[in-house]
Amino acid sequence: MTSLWLDRAAPVDDDPLPTEEQLDVVVAGAGLTGLTTALLLARAGLRVACVEARHVGAVTTGHTTGKVSLLQGTHLSRIRRHRSQSLASAYVDSNREGMEWLLRFCADHGVEVQRRAAVTYAATHDELGSVEDEHRAAGSLGLPVTWQERLDVPFPHVGATVLPDQAQLDAVQVLLALVEQLREHGGTLHQGHRVVSVSRTGEPVVGLERGGELRARHVVLATGTPVLDRGAHFARLEPMRSYALAFTGATALDGMYLSAGSDARSVRDAPGGVLVVGGSGHVVGRTRSEREHLEELRAWSARHYPQATETHHWSAQDYRTPDGLPMVDRLPGSRGRVHVATGYEKWGMANAVAAARTISGDILGEVPPWARELHGRAPSASSAAEVARINLGVAASLAAGAARVARERLPGAGAAATARECGVVGVCTHLGGLLKWNDAEETWDCPLHGSRFTPDGQVLEGPATRPLKRRTAPDQ
Ligand SMILES: Cc1cc2nc3c(=O)[nH]c(=O)nc-3n(C[C@H](O)[C@H](O)[C@H](O)COP(=O)(O)OP(=O)(O)OC[C@H]3O[C@@H](n4cnc5c(N)ncnc54)[C@H](O)[C@@H]3O)c2cc1C
Image (cartoon, rainbow, N blue to C red):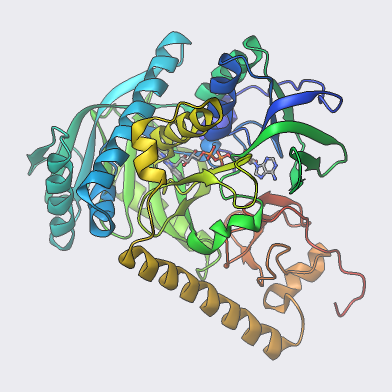
């Protein structure tokens, strides 16, 4: 399934791999985090290479809904449930800086942006309390939100908090402009090279899947969830997948809408009478049928926009943290040389840029004040409880997988028919989770930490770096 944004974009060329050079920084990942970090460092005069496992925008940035907003569903009140007002305020400052940088970059480099109000609405009376909480949290953090009972939309609502003058864009166009600027400042891009290792001693040596090594003073893992396990980030992140549909034949909207319920609906427009509807999310690999989620979203869209014609459908995942704040830090034991950024909880447009600002500031010795406060935070009691909940979910998935194996006496037998047909062993190469067949995307998805594979076992995304094992015997 190709997203509306990737479908419109031309492929990007590669530069020769600088295996003979001593680089200042290797950035792994050509999404919004990686390319912005690479550009900020290249602009400061550093020699930077960005290494991408697949292609520019291949994973979450290429499949986002592209709303750039400081009002983020019910995210601010979620942060306030776990953290102090001062940390929540640092979060808003970081996102304001991220958003301002991004919109300035778009204006300077000809990337189209539409200004829209951001709207968090209650679809039912049950959701009203959480929208009211968000309204209060946003107001207390200095955002000029207003309360509206009625919205000019065809779907049910009973009240909303509204923040004017936010923005929406095509994130793939942003990535293409970032690549162009990166090259203009002496940086290079290398697609189709998966990072599989970073040495622990001395200056980092980055190992690539197809062979070859890169040497640099610093490495930035901008890979969505980190691909090295040394910081055990995977144990504190929940991979959340959701679905999106694009339609033609819709009228322009004056807002970007997101409902407050657990089964959130996201609605925005795009130039040329395009409507984008998203939602119907779940933890990766932990649902009976992904296709049912997609169909549910289709049915909702058909009910409220019967005149619209579907052109694209896709799905994507992002990573939820225990306290709603992103994880931007140095990898333990790396002597400050390996940096990671993850956990934007589907609000990465501003957060990715803020993370890029934090990491580049760390390398260049000029960390913004909000970054010191956000990323120096100690675990809180409520976020520790959330970590426990996340790992209970992982344990339950492990137990369910083990029960399936015991029942059917085959590794990967839960999806055995298809795994055998595909000639792979349906066991994740990250930490051994039993894979689930995703019937919407036709992929192998791991219910433990969100790694995903093609039918023939190539890594698509998540913490795994190695392909699935091939079956060598019929009963394997
Ligand atoms: C359905 C959905 C809707 C969203 N809508 C919004 C929205 O409206 N507004 C908003 O602010 N945010 C939104 N988000 C969140 C936002 O899109 C993401 O947070 C953001 O794009 C993440 O960017 P990234 O660069 O960190 O990750 P990615 O874009 O995933 O980039 C990581 C890159 O690293 C590469 N990679 C992985 N492993 C390796 C390796 N070993 N070696 C080399 N490269 C590797 C991948 O191929 C990928 O290209 C949404 C997310 C989802 C899932």
